Image (cartoon, rainbow, N blue to C red; front, side):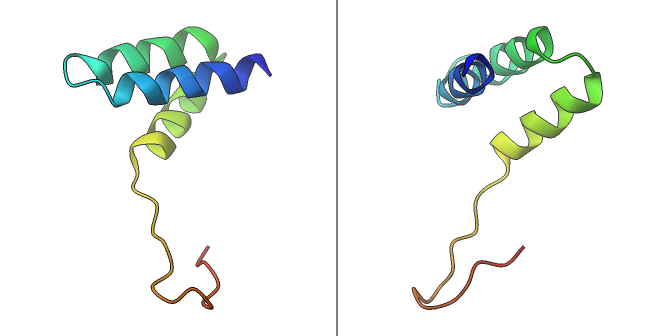
Length: 61
């Protein structure tokens, strides 16, 4: 539950107009053991989600 709260807080910082990216990354870096994990989580948060164009279409992986 704590990790989910950290990711949620980082996502909130990313929505802030002033300095959000740096604060979000710093929060993730402080809570991740490995730098590669920080990078993956940060990239997952900033990568736009592609929604299917047709509601009946399955999401692409």
